[in-house]
Image 1 (cartoon, rainbow, N blue to C red):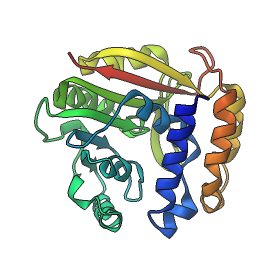
Image 2 (spheres, rainbow, N blue to C red):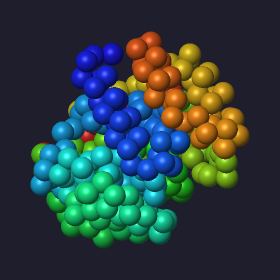
Image 3 (cartoon, rainbow, N blue to C red):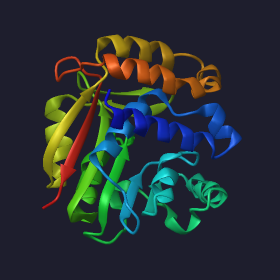
Length: 249
């Protein structure tokens, strides 16, 4: 792990820790440590930029982190509880840089060619039917020329299933091409593969723990992630996660 990567993960952890007691307890999810650190390595949200975060939850620290940098951050989700982010934003003095909108990502009514950066982290795999395809079309429409979109998904043998009563889809390389890249009309800058078999065994154990147990020591996920991050040598053939970096000319 490079010094830059270590600094990003440290900054995320420290920021999350100071938002609220709830954030201190829950911490930063193990897999988000990988996904979000890469998202920030590939993008550089700055003051005045228009940034879109698709599918953040009401206690997500990430859109608050982006807003704290001065970027005009729009957060969309189908759950009306997303508006609770505004309360946390006020606590850390970035309420003027964040707005929350309840809407469906497949038909987001947002201006075309508007956002310099779009994040869709571990979200699109939960949109059933052809919702992932329609969402990627929307992302391609609202991304500004010269902008970047970061999309992360579970990777492996293609399947559609449910976990904890929530729909999810695992993508193989062909599905990434056909369901995510082509519908977006965007260009691929790179695809980063994460979670080799060793890490997948750990995450399988972690995410099959009862939810209240897993969340009660969420504060420690960051330290596990740092350890496994340095050992992760995943490839296209053995990864459990894919992070797709797209751009618009």
